[in-house]
Image (cartoon, rainbow, N blue to C red; front, side, top):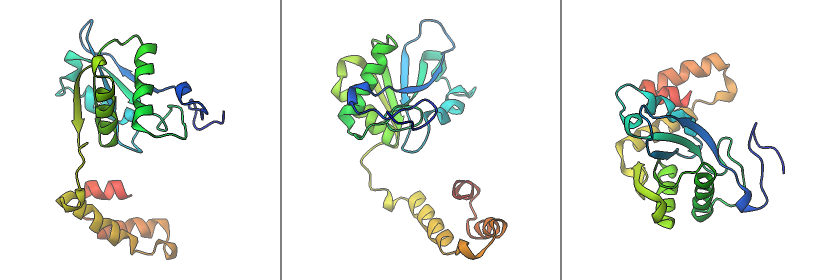
Length: 185
């Protein structure tokens, strides 16, 4: 095994992949579980603020596992990224944590993993919750087009000839929307 991050290791055998994440206890006792998977390159723990907000009522009715699937975050890595292998990892995680039934959900690619897992193991899941996980061609959506324009504008800055402070200033000039600007920076 070779080290990937502080807890993750590279596994040669697919059935040895161990998943890790963060547990958010629900606000009641004896609540069912929601397993939440994030999008690619986004740690599942980024959703902690979303689920713990006062106006979010999910923790009133569920315990939540913010789970990193294989090759993400502190979960183990393996050469396979197949949905079937990822689904089997989640089942092993559930067995290890004595979760008989759960709701599963995710964002982006995490929604695809959640859907595949629920389909492959329908007897273990009570529902599926997906955000932005469908097979959609995003190129025609306004947000995609806006982001693509900003990426093209920033790509044309020529950062190699400027200081970091000048590059930040130029990004501020080119990217007017504060959220897109923070993502690009």
